[in-house]
Image 1: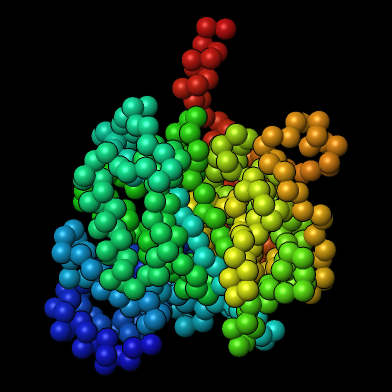
Image 2: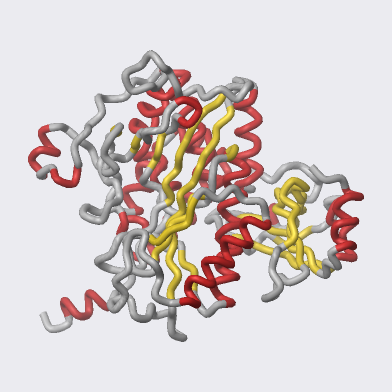
Length: 442
């Protein structure tokens, strides 16, 4: 981590004019204060305050005056010579109360607290995210243009040089910010891509996800596109997921999910984590898939998992075991989407896995068939359960989930539940164009 003096020297030598202080609300949306560099001393001494009363999840009166604590490990200079980020740097911040005590509603601080508690058990969780997203051309009303004319699919070459230029600039920017990029390629739906950000500890990975989304939106906008992480923006096409490759290591960095003697090369830690994730998935789905639109993706025939099973073979399972073993042994959780707040998502995943290890939860037998080819009767005979079908049922399961409540703490748990209930009630009152077309002449 850089010292205060080193940070100031970097700001001076690079002629940085602005510093962005960024933090995350309960829905995972990035909030930013833009300050002139001359305030760097106040920034580093945690003197910058803001009014949190209007921020989602920070709504009670006591949270009106909040203080930003920049995490110096997140300091970076935005590597652009265009846009409003030119000659700008940033910190990701934790949120504290005005008296300096940690604010219970800060998603990032909550995850840090949970990680600190797990260090006492000498476990460290790492996650490698595979983020799917869209780059659209849109009109002034946010209507997606040419989606029906576009036919590119998996690993195809884009038809537009400007499109490729935008993607190349996204990659270059991430490399300059020292991201560990595994791959970037076209996905199955029109205008859809996937990027694999590489492995890291869950706090760093959560920071990387929100940084990636922020930077991608800025670059896409500059090149005339709209970057969208909406789970299901196009009817009749695959949605975008956030596949999470999860592993657990000990204090020496040994992969605790690997066991050479097991037929699947999985350890008891891995089996207990699988068992706990399958057992608790309904109660944490509201966090992993937090929007109305999330459940338009979680339907049959569009490659998204809907059945609560695990497999070493099929990608139709909720949890898949990738073929690489040894130090690379991991569980791939395939249901989350990028609308999730990564700090909350990783908190419930970590708590779920640790709870499973403590209780030695055994998973059911794996299913190695393509689940999408099974009939409804076969699904019923095998007693295979499904994920919640909409946000309402997901919230009902969330409200009963002790794992979620333990992971998030009372404050975030209640604020999240309240926020999402409001969202559901707003949605259920809407009259959609589909309803007008279907029922107006009835």
